[in-house]
Image (cartoon, rainbow, N blue to C red; front, side, top):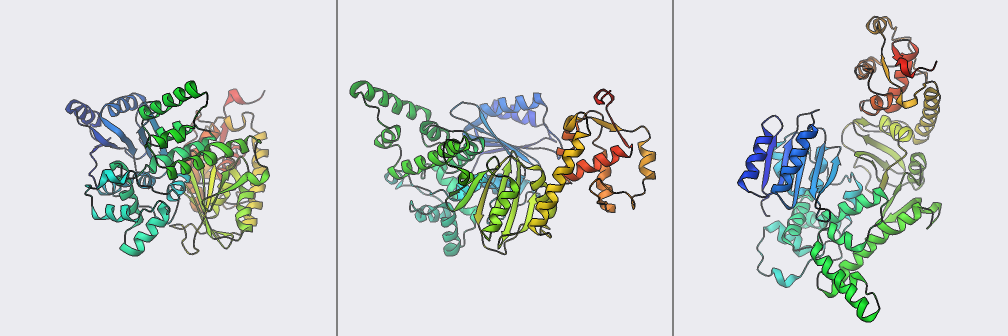
Length: 506
């Protein structure tokens, strides 16, 4: 497996000096990794400097990675726009799936990174990648190739039919290869040009599906690293020449195959991708194609769709009605929720720092946008940690409906709605101490445990007379947002919080 050239620097050290030294040396890197302190961020000036320096020393497929124990952000070179493609990860471990060759390097230097369970698919990108079929490029060019043993095993197993998941399962059963090792070998084969690109292809499709963005075949092939911009331009010029000489416009895909740049099977796969991810689903979302039955569609054995077509409660009930075992993943921006189903009932759930019933309630009450994928999976493989769901789905749906109604009533009482700005009352500390916590009941009739009162104190520290309620609630990850909101309203009623004077109706 080829060794990656990686520049690793830490925010605690003089990372700007190290970047300048690398630029001066003229060295080209496959990756630049900047370790950030927890809770810290780069200033706009530092971001501009880092991107400028990275553009000069990263290779053509290079990646800039900003990573902490809490999250990660990558910038990959975009050959189409000559800029950067940005991707956010709500867990640093998720980077290991997208960039498997970096896995060992990061694990050695960042011990807090937890390797993901290979059987738990945590994003639409990973589903597309695992269900993609690796295909070899021109075999005659690689007869003299010498690679590591695991690369040969993966290469020899590729048959142009089996997808990544099937290959990984077969290699694990026959040779004991882990899923991470298989993915790293595939990325290595990609870099050597022995197989057509898989990882950038999956990332492009995932991005287009989430944005409901159609795309042209030529743009897809360049963005996925299958063709260079120059190769595409030659084919487009050939297409224009044939239109001029014969009056007929040949299909771009056929010209690319005729030029020997891709194979017929790959072209068919690319066209299928274009239809599903960049064609029919966009038309369906606009009401041009399909009906309500298109809210959930099937792709390689998985159910996929968007929350603009079906709400979260209906989605969960649809999976429950099918009485299936599997993992439901919903992505919204850089946030991801996972719900493990067993015989149609949610058995475990995770959403950021939330787990179990709280994660499901947050999903049901607050999430109205995002993309989802449900993959069949054997029972017994629950999500890691204390994530078990204790309540029946129907009870959670009813509780979530009541919570939504209560939130509507609360927001109507606030002149600025979710943009209302609050600050602590002048005598907040004294009133806080006088509260009889055993008798206090929130607007929904519930009470807080001693541990929850401690969490509420943390929430109060975010109220500063500047941030809006929306910013405070959305930025507090230790509670479901509805619980944060009704707790804030409770303290507002008790006089511990005060609305910003300029926003109070006269």
